[in-house]
Image (cartoon, rainbow, N blue to C red; front, side):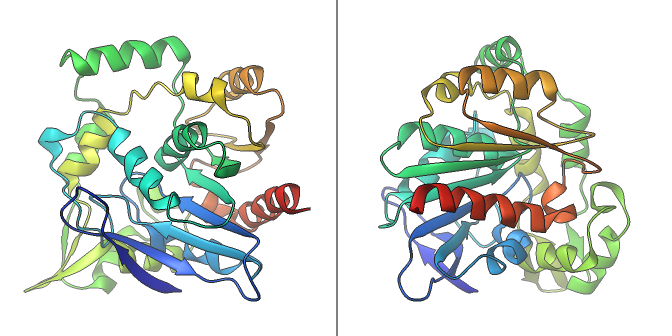
Length: 293
């Protein structure tokens, strides 16, 4: 898996991304968009397991991983900056694109797929963050009128431990704890490898706690207008517990995009890519088959 860097127009800094080339000429390009607080390398086992006729990549969204684009929490008012970054990235791709996205990455991928129907030919949503239609609209209005409040999720992210004596100490800090309780150790190692940087006395998380917290604070995205515009095949995978896309939401999604394939993954939490990676690979292959046959 290669790490590459791209300078986006009108931005200072660079966008870091993982890239795995295809062999014998790519038929399709798969991009994996990560969740808030994570990074591209967290998902590298999925990218590496794809057939080699699929070109695969994953960007470190700004404020995450090894990307150095500006990430000032005080200036963040929505997830639209991520949508713009991903749009600029996929506009550089020459192959038809499948967008896969987990959590926040799924919500961002919906907006990009709706904006680039000629480029994005399929969409895989992995327990995306999708608020109820009216709630999302109200929260968006509250955000722009500065009425958003400190939720437990925001408060928890803001207090996240950032400094560690070593990468190994960071891994040990997460194993069998909290959100990482269902993760295999090697996935945590990839998360730490891609999401930390060296300091004079150890390592620190490259996604600052205040940046992660602000992402949660402005998470009242309103994706429904974009959902209504989707024209490509969509597969929606949801967790069977702790989901950010419960049955009422996935049913509403299918109402607006009737061809959507909806699957609730038994025994999976919101972190189903880490718990069921083979299922994610199968879903990508299924979508690739639909657009290349």
